[in-house]
Length: 82
Image 1 (cartoon, rainbow, N blue to C red):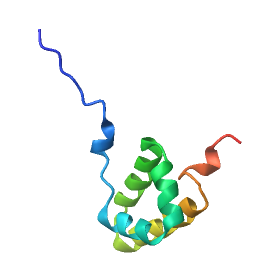
Image 2 (image 1 turned 60 degrees about the horizontal axis):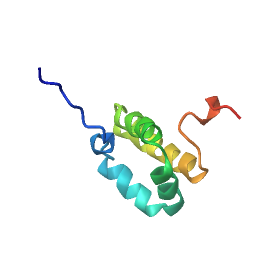
Image 3 (image 1 turned 180 degrees about the vertical axis):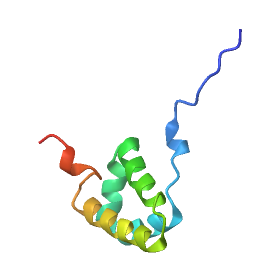
C-alpha cells in the first residue's frame, strides 16, 4: 500500500503578489510586521487583496493593508480577544 505524503512545509504554497511585495518593501515597519505573522495571518491579507474584482478595490485594500500592518494589526484585529 502506498501512502500519499503531503508537503508539511506549506510556506512554499504561499505566494505574495508582486505589487504587495513592492509596497511592503517601501514600508519597512509594515514589512517587519508581515514577515513576523503566522502563515494564516499572511494568507488572510493575500487572499483579501487577490479577491478584489477591480484594480481600484485592490489599491484600496493594499492601502488598508499597509495601514494595519504599520500598526501591527492582523486583518481581523477587531475580532481578536483582548
